[in-house]
Image (cartoon, rainbow, N blue to C red; front, side, top):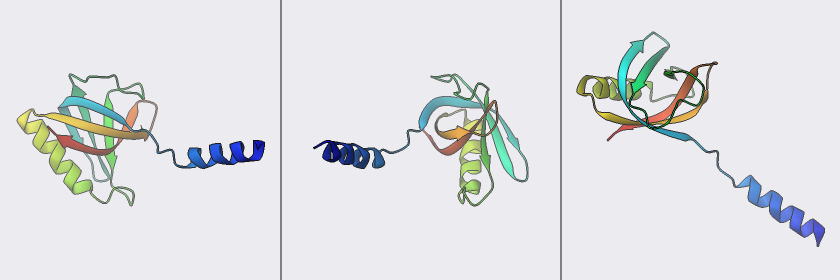
Length: 104
């Protein structure tokens, strides 16, 4: 019986999806470099979980939609629209990495 319970718990834990943080804010600054872009947000509903104010998207194999994200960030910045940013983790001590985002 104990083996059955342990096997059931381990099976259920394997289906657990990683939790991504959702941030609602406005883009106040946008910085662009050749391999990444960084944005700073204002009026955030929650503090940035990595301890800073920077959100980044890197141009690499993990982000095939880099150009689309940059276009979306630029449109949100110029129109002062609200955005929802989904964070997938921390890149540095004070920089959060964006998984995806949307204007709402």
